[in-house]
Amino acid sequence: MPARKPETDPILKKMEITTQNPEETLILGEKLGKTLQSGDILLLYGDLGAGKTTLTQGICYGLGLARKEYIRSPTFTLINEYKGKGPIYHIDLYRVDTLEEIENLGLEEVLFGEGVSIVEWAEKLQTSAYGKSVGLEEHPHITVKITYTHENKRSFAIEPVNMTDRASPLFSLQ
Image 1: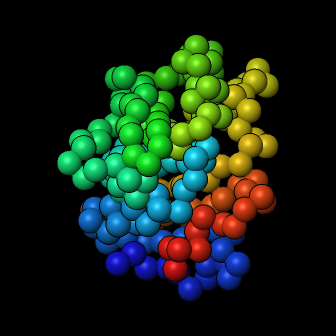
Image 2: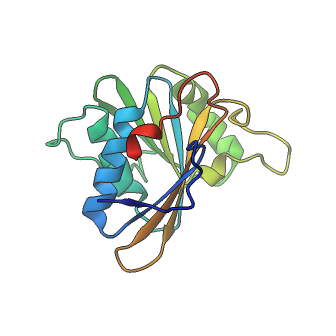
């Protein structure tokens, strides 16, 4: 079972969790997915092989997607849509190089719609040198920073941002 670090903020504004293998990462994702609501946005940060897609698989299962469904990173299609309890949008920005390309994808409709959006390579959404962004700075979202610490071991820093209108989605991960 994923372990919480003792230094985790007691009011759970931020949680740090370490998983020992892909199965634990899947369980972590599933637990996180069960806490999510329609309209939630998850921004995943991490290097290649960090575990973003494995975490996303678990999140999708937690959102009600059948385990028989194959979840793959949409590296070439850019957006995959799955049907759980509601729409799930799995977005991969690895192959996108500019904010203009992101704007041309029409992500605002997906990100700010009714489904749950999970964005891999979220750093590409950050404000560009031209001062433009997709508008996430003030919008409620959850950041998940994944660090590859060993062959199978991963560290996850999960933080709700601007989510003041409801209880933190992290409580059930205790």
